[in-house]
Image 1 (tube, helix red, strand yellow):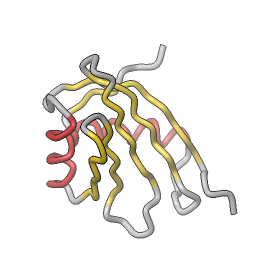
Image 2 (cartoon, helix red, strand yellow):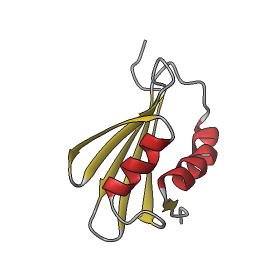
Image 3 (cartoon, helix red, strand yellow):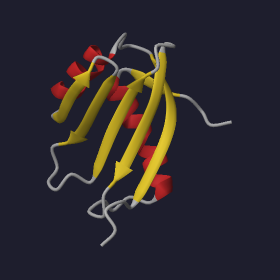
Image 4 (spheres, helix red, strand yellow):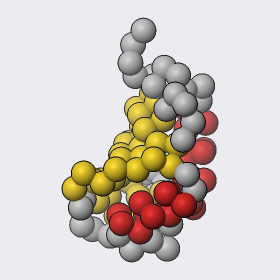
Length: 101
């Protein structure tokens, strides 16, 4: 079984949250597992077992950064569903996803 089902990269910017520490706190409050290995990198996944989607937030010091969503084979989302559902994650995290051009 191939270990990656979908990988999506999007741009995001801070909205209600002002830094990755605040993003982490908001996700923690909604029962996500989070790890902040550096001040500019946040990794998160939901508490669902097994972890179906892993989110990697990269702060590019421009008021936002890149979000890499990695879906494992355990995930049941289509590529379109990932793009649609990331808006809910953004609201929870206090960020905005930038529209693709």
